[in-house]
Amino acid sequence: MPAHEKLIRALGGLLGGSLNQLFWYALLACGVWLFFSLVFRARFRHRRISRQEPTRRQVGRELLFSLRSIIVFGVVTGAVVYAACSGWTRLYVSIDDYGWGWFVLSIVVMIVVHDAYFYWTHRLMHHPRLYRAMHHAHHLSMSPTPWAAYAFSTAEAFVQAGIGPLIVFTMPVHPAAFGLFMVWQIAFNVFGHCGYEIYPHWFLKSRAGLLLNSVTHHAMHHEKFRSNYGLYFNVWDRLMGTNHPDYEQRFELASGAPQGSLRH
Image (cartoon, rainbow, N blue to C red):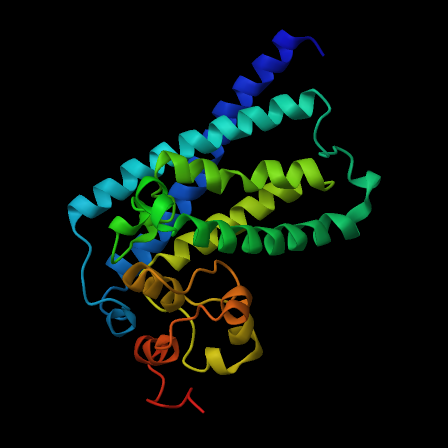
């Protein structure tokens, strides 16, 4: 493929990637925000994790930072499209090349890989020499809203976007499978910043609760800074001893569990 055609497709990837991210982010964040903050605000008031209400200034900042991050994601998407046109990635077009089994399994693999990538890059960005330049912008939201999910500095946005190139350069993946993975990560991120505990009070005592993170888990990270680094799963925090010691107690309060029911 001629270089100029690759460049045109890369620019199309930049625009298309940005618009696709914007669509799903706006759809999910608006939906979650309307659900908890307007339509069912009174009904879910007891499940609000933080007593600090977000200000208009905070929400405006989150929106601005999120738009900046989406532009960065578009730039990375454009670069990936250029690499794919050059034959440098492992993206494939025909599902028959690897079958439906791998199509489904690849989504699971991407989620697991992303969880590990997020945990370790997240901890790295909390290093004193990196924190202010890379991660401080995200922590300006002490009581986050759904719009905080993508509220990153430019540097952190590139780090967050790095999971895309890592995946497409190292494993065979169909664009549709990657798209479904992206919708999953946006949805999980948006709910993780909604400020309301969505899981039932018995969740942490279940097998799912041993594996998955709750909204309370990440909300405490925004409050405490030095714990609860995980994204989807609670595996790395458990293995590395970085769960906050008050996590179960805070989950009890937010989920309406009987006090002390989760402690052994």
